[in-house]
Amino acid sequence: MGVTCPAGTDLDTYWATLKEGRSAAGPITRFDATILPEPFRFACEVPDFDVSPYLDFKEARHADRATQLGLAAAMDALADAGGDALTGATDPARCGVYVGSGVGGLMTLEREDRNLFEKGSSRVSPYLVPMMMANATAGTVGLKLGWTGPNLCVTTACAAGTHAIGEGALMIRYGAADVVLAGGTEACNTPLAMSAFGRMGALSSRVDDPTRASRPFDPDRDGFVMGEGSGILLLEEWDHAVARGARIWGEILGYARNSDAFHITAPAPGGGGAAACMQLALADAGLEPGDIAHVNAHGTSTPLNDASEASAIVKVFGERSVPVTSGKGVTGHLVAGAGAIEAVAVLLSLRDGVVPHTANHEREDPDLGIDVVSGAPREVAPGPAVSNSFGFGGHNASVVLGPGPAPAT
Image (cartoon, rainbow, N blue to C red; front, side):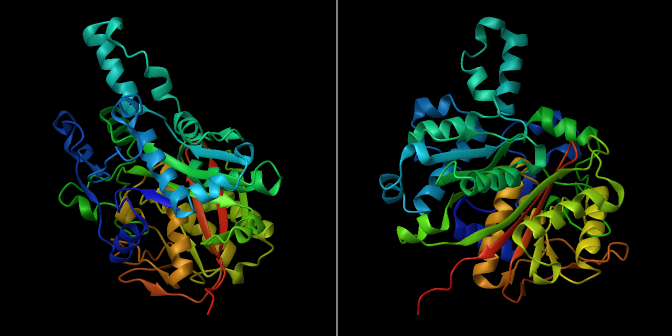
């Protein structure tokens, strides 16, 4: 597993920050945000990110920040999985990549658009197209590693990271690959994106204290905080991992995807599509609702999404019957990167038997009817967990994750 996100750029830091519940939100530093209204001037940024261990100077100049963050997470995941020992023992034609991105290289696109109108077409970078395209991260990872197996990108907005993990697992299940690097990446803390999400009312306007702005499932929630970053998992067939003596973090037990077919941005009232998606994922895993130890919710901190998802959870599991958490009070909303870093969090939870609390969840919303883990991390009984992601366009994705094998004694 690899993470490059506002809560940390290594697994230990990320996990410690989640358990602490310390928000990464703060004033935007990557551009002069004073050009924007005050509520659009804060976000969650990846701190002190250094791309040089992954790309040389020239390569980095020709890679959008979304690609840089995604490549770093992918290479860290590969190293965590054994690095050279893995690649040396695996046919490159049997190695695949599946990385999601909601908007691709938006930072590059905005910069070059300004160049066009301020300096003329001769100042537009010839690298604009490969830098802005949504599949650039997947292509760059495959190119860097020389992997010639399936190489794909999914662009289902905020569900893309979970979709990529699930579809990557299906590649292995169907025999198309033995190893897949799968996850999501995003970097849309940009003037245009902040303005667009803000104008549509999706962002929190809690300017008095950005660290308390993202408050999933709290009755005072008023929108999400934009984030950036990436999470990548290295997936492989179980026997393939055992044969090479790999450390196994966990197992993908089930996966499902469907569509609300209701509205281009709003979730279906009552959460019917999300509930059906979770039920399909449980059926794919051969599990019942009572087998699930906790739910890692999409939990964006928007009034409509949280209400719809809570209704879906109650439909599937019953009222206050399963612990529910969201990491977005710490990391903000990473769009395509969200589901991927949240899958990492679930696997770390399964390892330790501890679910991080939902940062900034200060009061129970009596209208939701779910058991939100708040105030402090909670120990949970061993068992599989569900991780949800839902995206604009009505895209739903749920993955069921189980723990890895018990350590040898």
